[in-house]
Image 1: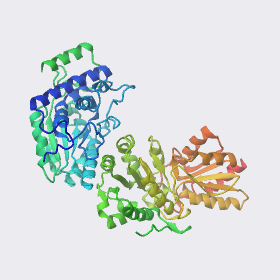
Image 2: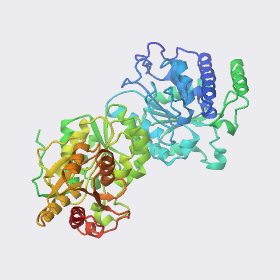
Image 3: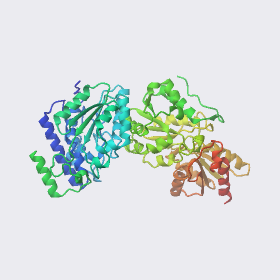
Image 4: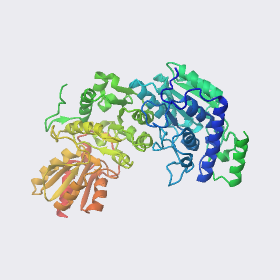
Length: 285
Length: 319
């Protein structure tokens, strides 16, 4: 069912795939400006989720930027909270607050905390300590079911999240409770803080393991906007199971010298020429 | 609807029984809360709710970190989660989930934990949480409540549901003498003076309140007039009542079933050091882990029994 009641300004499918891809590029550009201005932050993992955020905020979620605390709104939890530069600029693009606020990232005078804070309009859950996001999303999903509310909850998880035991407790519980109003998107960009996932703690076939706990699982290219749209639509029609979308992604996606380079995980002070080059590449894209 | 039934003064009652009783009562009174359990409803005392109102209980299995962070998410939907488990899990294993997913966003979650202090008895050191007041008090904006007995627990439970914001409350396990009146409403941040006195003030919390009253009786026989204050609200603490004790009596003895670091004694000392420095003695577990035993013989073995409170008071008065 398509419910546009909460989003008069932007109904489902209002934007084309091309327009959603353009939003993702704009998220990348603004996100790098924010990290540059902050002289710290995590660009690599922010760039890898830009396409998902574009689809979630400009197509999928039933939200109203004018009513960020509405009880019946769809919820979004960025469990990999260090990627919040991308979330903040997505919220700004969607109209929650002016972009100039998002660009005050990590500064005392702004309200753009270094990791997500619910005092920021549109941020539904705190995070930054990995492993707690899926549980919070599960709690929202349970709250919806208990109160007969039909909103949906979306959680983006990173590689580090999947290494935390807390995440697997939530995986077990959500499968057991058949939470079909809950969607987890795993941003599998394959590089973690200090080294590749393969050297730090290889988890094997994560989607297969999650599936064993009763989830409906899908594998997609996490940078294919159309694929993200259809995976989320499939999740909406799935009954009796939560959906886990394994999104194959590239850390630093969209900027040639950042792609698959560990240095750009964070916390990075970006040079003037690096920002210029990155923005030029994204302009040309 | 049946009225909530309280116990007569002097009855020996486990606070766990009060937890089950007040849960069932409040399930009728308010529809806006649910209990979150991690397979220990029999141990925490919540079992009567599971029997009477199964649809008010959300079961998480033995996965407390998930339960705690999920409580934070659930609170965002407008429900009040009452999270219940043993204190070692609620106040330590899932402490960071409470801090980051509940306290930091100021979500309306009530954490009620059993298995606190030597009061746990035979289960021994790993179950005897002697650090919960310290860990929970250290988190910004969290209200910390430690009721003296079954009656006060039921009053306090209603008060914390009324209060907007994160709360931690202790649930005692062993039979404890009822010392508070049935019709005394609970006010967060307010202490209760249970006995007047001029020479010394005994400030107790939890099971130590009944012991402080017995110690005051013992001291009266020796000609020492001891005031007794029940400090169930550890945070916020009743600074005015403490300043009154510091100005009107010769010193303060704190008594608690908790490690000496970070609990009631620390909270009282922090308050008075700034407001009105007083001579103090701390009756608490002296930086040791607990041990298997009975709730009847463990207090003396660890120096937190009635006689230890009386001895600390004598030392203050005569020193």
